[in-house]
Length: 303
Image 1 (cartoon, rainbow, N blue to C red):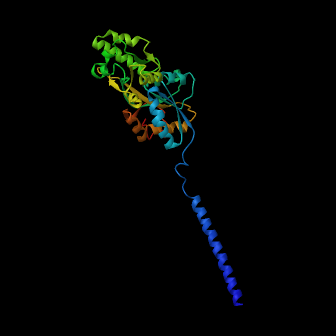
Image 2: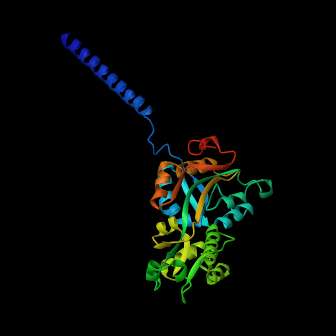
């Protein structure tokens, strides 16, 4: 009888132990279900289509794109060309963009208003960079550029000069202005002739490649662009010209959430630090033209 009672007590103890284990497992399960999701699992996915000035190509693809993806989960799909060409592509429905980053406010104006299709309602100036003369470091004219005025060197026989088409790229407009202003100030008609010749006009991407391979001795570009691609440069003494970068959300952008996330990232302290690494002059706070900035962007853009 005693043995039976002992066995019965042992069975009850075993059942209690199993029940406790079950409760503990349930407790663990409950605890794990309330554990906050990791930051990685809360990130987004999908693309954002950004049209950016050709001078931003290296910055966007090598610095901003990877950092933006790591921070948000979105993937930057960047198309970089002359700002005027990109605006025309948007306006003529050649391609669809979520965000437009221009090197000139004047280009944004071609997309504003009913007569221009109401493609954008506002834009924010956020950075600038001086126009300079980049050069091939192994050029036979490299030492001359380091010791002589730039405007004398580029008129030397055999100097291969590059600039972008002013109808397609704001940098080409600034190059022509630099040549014309210096021609008048220094009484050098040869510079004025260079400003009108089409033989030295290049599309922006090939121009950058040619200055790195030596196909060109020198080319007009923005200082930030020269820094990003590692090209030596000289300042355009005697003139004060710069590219003024703007950013805007294209109306009816197909990837609206990703577009706003990109603008917030680029104008955030992290995005600005990437631009400062290439010596961009930051406009803080960004200067807004137009109206209708989305409420989701008010933390980085004050209307």
